Length: 101
Image 1 (cartoon, rainbow, N blue to C red):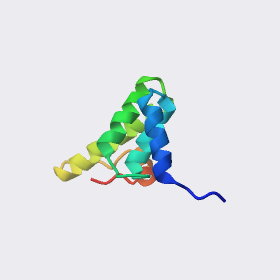
Image 2 (cartoon, one colour):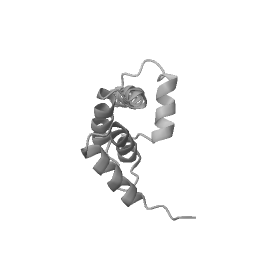
Image 3 (cartoon, rainbow, N blue to C red):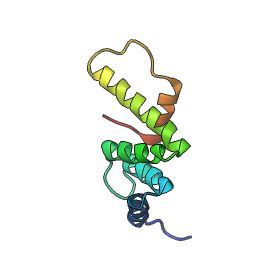
Image 4 (spheres, helix red, strand yellow):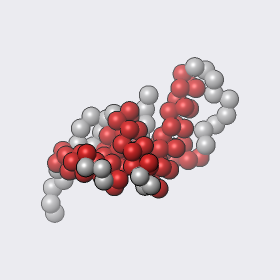
């Protein structure tokens, strides 16, 4: 098979995102969150996910809600304010995207 070039893939997604393509923005958000082809950057991931969601990208909108809920849970844990278990969707997000604080 063809070897994966994650750096080149991220560069293509960055170019697509800079040109305002919602799919490119969403894919770049996922790459930023996972650290694929570069550093992991939750804030950058959230920025691109929000931009794609604003353009009507439904998967980006769902991921953005989950990402923000996951961040809120981590912040609450850090402040000792966790009073309930995270929503099931949050667990999926944490597993799928490996969100860490």
